[in-house]
Length: 269
Image (tube, rainbow, N blue to C red; front, side, top):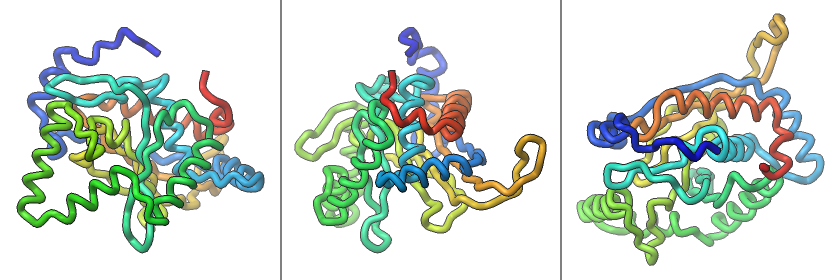
């Protein structure tokens, strides 16, 4: 990892002043990727009893990208300066009972294998569906119970206190790292081919990664047009802390892992 990166260069200092989140600071992008071979890899994993999913693979790939390829994305903005996060933590959106959405945080996501990722998420989702909520979901319930307009005022106060000023409220589970380094959501399971995510204003993450639906499409492979399974990836990045080039490096690494998923079977060096 390059430790000489200047996170607070002149442009970053200016960007933190001229952009406000999330109304005008988003960079949106998308890319189609061939996941035919990746789905074969997932099928083989499932035959061995490890219930791996596309979401898990892309979440782990993104975490590894922040570890080695784009550490500039593992940051957050505090008091007008970019601060490096202490670890690479992933937040995965999950569907609970009915249409209710929840989230599971994967601490130190860059340090685990795909088998460990699958087992951890399966366990946490089971807890959430059984009513054992994590801190983030508990806070959502408490905030929802506050009458309007007091709800908006308290929300704004929490956001200023934890995000802009960088303080923590341990009893409420609120810290600048409450939502981890990035968020991953699979909207393909909901019937959407692709979507462009919002940079959730409570999260302070540098990007949100969206997985769309997998569709069979004609694809050029070895100069021949063949049917392949294609996944559309979408992302929203916070322009205050990163540029399009960082998104490009992130997507290049995701594509590399999609072609070489076996690299996720071992812990990173």
